[in-house]
Length: 151
Image 1 (cartoon, one colour):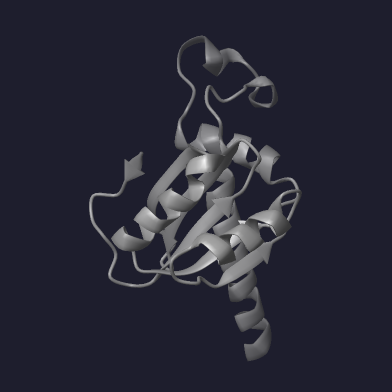
Image 2: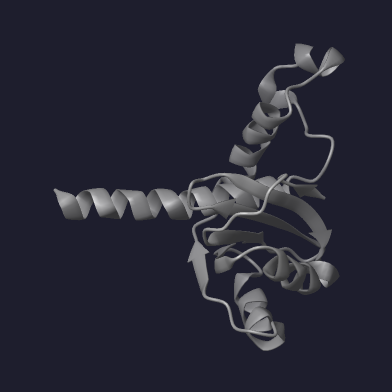
């Protein structure tokens, strides 16, 4: 479990990369500061989201729009104690992008450094990195539409 050393006062966004067996979670502020990220078993995802809501001022849940999204969205609406706004974001190519981001966040050491980046496999699941990317995609979409409306 990775927590930032201090808790935000501004609203934050919860990123959720839903899966059948495991889910990625991330909490990022509107200032794009990363406060939390973790991969959890799918059966613990809702309880973990509830815990995160007690710890952070979560204003929105951003979720990937692929395979299990519809089922998860329904489950979140049914099982969360208080409803949460859920926005679906295109998650196409996010796993490939997450692999590259993993190596930026955790530079390779030892012999792994010698492998070309495309051949390196992260040593752990990277669903939490996908959750980070989903939030970034959402924030980038907001920024782009704000710029377009000013033009």
